[in-house]
View 1 (spheres, rainbow, N blue to C red):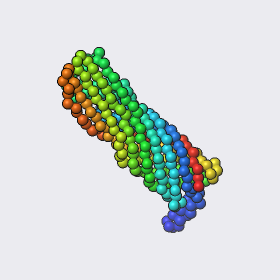
View 2 (cartoon, helix red, strand yellow):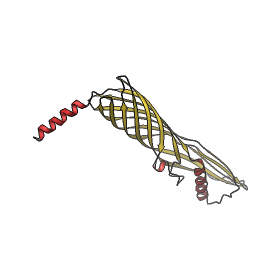
View 3 (cartoon, helix red, strand yellow):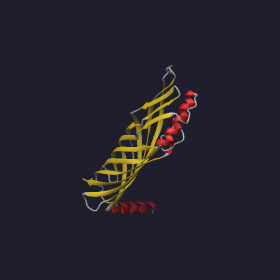
View 4 (tube, helix red, strand yellow):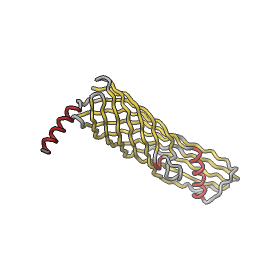
Length: 240
């Protein structure tokens, strides 16, 4: 009896589920930073990232009724909480060089935004129900990440503190996502997606304090910082 019931359920499910269609698509939306990437608590460990923008090129190819392989190419950008980062950066330099920077010091701080490009591939499961389908995916691959500049120049009395950063690195990244597709016809459709993306960035720093005419030694460091965002997107797909 149990085998008969399972067979009936399988037949009903097969009847409800429509034939899956391959597609390519373009989606855009918001990039919402989370975790230490969005935190503003520690200059050497958190990203000070703000909400930004993401642009996704996506495609799914199905070799079974509900199972296939998907690919995603993403360009993302997140701003930087400049004021919080500047304040914490000054505190960090004071502790590093064991100095006290007076409030009337001349401070020039330059920062930019976070940017990243992802090239991911991985399995996808989709449950198509006539004109609507529900999709789950897990992908991994390469993330090309450029952290924001963190350049600061501080002068007071006869002393000068300088700190500059650079970094553009390739790291492993992964994406876990879900989506809902609406197919008004067999050619085009609309997709709403929500993805979680995670990777890691490296930041190279050079810092120095010059006291009067004496040039200080350059201190170099390499910091690792997490990159974690939610992508909420709306896009259009072409089915084939």
